[in-house]
Length: 220
Figure 1 (tube, rainbow, N blue to C red):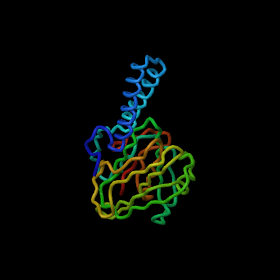
Figure 2: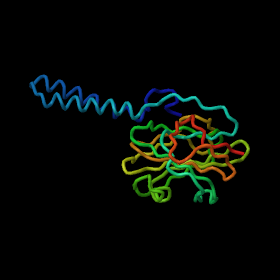
Figure 3: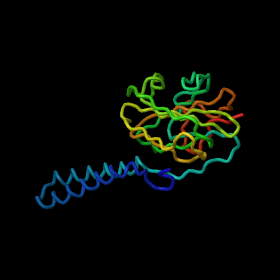
C-alpha cells in the first residue's frame, strides 16, 4: 500500500506542485511588470504550498509492542468515549472518537493487526464532526478488522464540514499490520474506533492521541 515510507502523502503532491508552480509564475510576473502586489500574492501562494506540505506530512511512528494493544488510528483529540451501538456489526461496543483539526497529520494508521473482513462506504451529510450525529449521518468509510483470535473491531473514517475526500487503501481479504498506514482524510475530520465491551480502556476524553503510538485499550 502507498505512503508507507514517503515523507509526504502522495495525495498531497498535486496540491504542493500546484501551489509551488503558481507561486513561481506569480513571482516571475511580478518581476517582469514590477508589481509589488503580485509579489505579495506570490508569497501568499508560497505559504499555501508550505501549508500543504505540512498538512500532508507522513511522520514516522514507533508502534508499541504491548500484547493486545489497540493504538490510535490518527493524531487528534478524543471527543467521545462511551458505550455505543455499532450499526454495522449490530453489537453494543465501546466507541472512541478522535477529532483531527487541519493542523494534525491526516494519515491514518492501522490500530491493530489482522484480516480486513469488511469495507463499507456510506454517502451522507457533511455536518461538524464534533456533533455525535456525524457517526450515523455523515459520509463515512469503515473497515472491520478481525484479529488472529477472532476479535473484531471497527474503524470508521468520517468526513466533516471541510473534509470531502476519504481515502482507504486496503481491500477485503488483506492481512494488515498494526501501525501500517491505511488511508487519510483531507482537511479536518474524525475517526471512530469501536472496541468490544471487554476491552481495557487506557485513554480519556480530552486526551491528545498520536496515531500509531497512543494505546486506546487492551483487548482481552
